[in-house]
Length: 168
Image 1: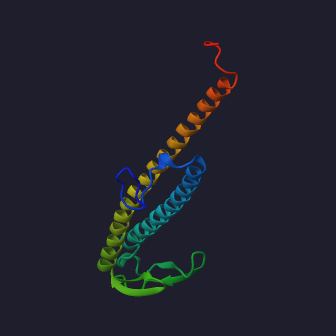
Image 2: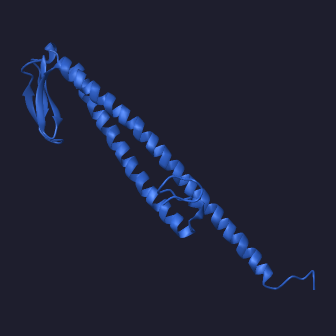
């Protein structure tokens, strides 16, 4: 539904909403903001893990470490002793439990692309979050103005009940 003030379809002037609906709108925006912030943190964690993979490849996979014992992660808390069989290739997790053998150069390229893609997604998500934060501030300001206006009208209405004193 379009408002009379020339807004696009589906848009409503928030100053025309009652305080109760504004508070519901603010609650909804707060929930969306919380979800977006959680998603933002998850993307940051994923980006950090990809950077850790890059660090592991650059520091831990080379000819000098080929003969040294190492711990191989089976789960996030279970490691078993192992040995690097080929320092020129690694297995990388490409998602949902699928692993692919790649050269260290290809694996580095893969993880660099993942870090870059996540950086782009984080930038886009940050813009969305900033927009939501601005929307929340706008709704809060409208609520504040409406509450102050209602208080002022209530104060003037209380003085008006006794009737005007000057003209009598």
